[in-house]
Amino acid sequence: MSRDLDRRTFIKGTGIAGVAGLAGCTGGPTDGNGSDDGNGSGNGDGNGDDTGNGDADVDANIGMIYAEAGLGDNSFNDAAQRGLLEADEDFNISFNEVEPDDTGEFSQFQRQFSESGDFDLISCIGFAQEDALAESAVDYPDQQYMIVDTVVEADNVANYVFKENEGSFLIGYLSALLSQTDLTIGSDDDERSTNPDESVVGFVGGVDAPLIRTFQAGFEAGVEYADGDVEVISSYTGSFNDPNAGREAALSMYDDGADIVYHASGGTGVGVFQAADDEGKFAIGVDSDQSLTEPDFAHVILASMVKLVETPVYESIQNTIEGSFEGGSVVELGLEDEGVACVYGDEIGDEISDDIKDDVDDVRQQIIDGEIDVPEEP
Image (cartoon, rainbow, N blue to C red):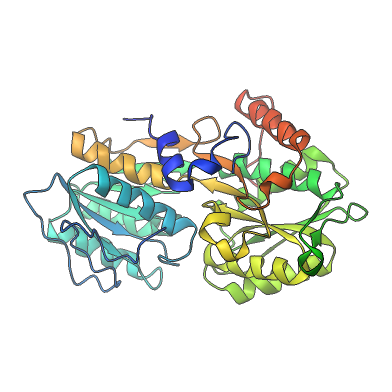
């Protein structure tokens, strides 16, 4: 199984400017219509009525089932699609993409793709597909699947999980240090600043699920490691696709003195950025470098906890083509593997001092060396 894709995929996903400080904390998706070179077979409308062409002239036909929030989240799903589109550039593949409207449709699409017999690999994006895939994998033992963010114990499923708590620890550590620093960015008519006299930071989660709590756990532990006197406010909106709820949650935190709010909430996080913009405060993105994917809010995004979902998508496709697909395997991607990373904002990341960046680099290495044990639960 190839493990040399992480840095190349990272560079293509974030742009060269974002890679300069990868050792610690460094600084677009299509419309889902499938490949534009004549190989793509999907219509991306979520109807699932085109189940692939089974084209014998391609090296692999891929079925892609996204997480509930769908494409256009500029975060998790879009990162997964980047891996698919990179594979489409590098290999001779065809693919079909679907965007379920709710979790009840995961089983429907998994079975529809499987029964067609057209797909060499079916990619299931997101932990919420676990229960459906546990059944599909048994019912279709000859079908190859991959899943991101959870483990399905079956011989025909390749599993990829991330150490989100490690990347979030760096974000928490960075946030705490910045909250104790007099950081002012912008002009008189658009100035935002921290208030070191209060030292409060926030975390906004989407659905309250074990996976998202690992983000919270790492973030809170990172804050504590920097300084136990920094206050953390955490809350969940219950959705990965509700910007209004994200905005209200973040506004409440800013009203309570937070300088910086980190979100792990998919499309809901746009509301966090809106609130930071409204209140003259800062925010931190997730999954993708959101200073690039949400350019309208680049002026409020200090950093993002990038989670390279594109890497397992690309790798599983490559393994399928090369005949090295490993069903039953579990691949963990953390800081050491560059599966997660702290990425400074493209527009304002340079305003963070070199001393703080060096401290973040040191903590990153301590985690890799096993000197810091990062919790998985808050």
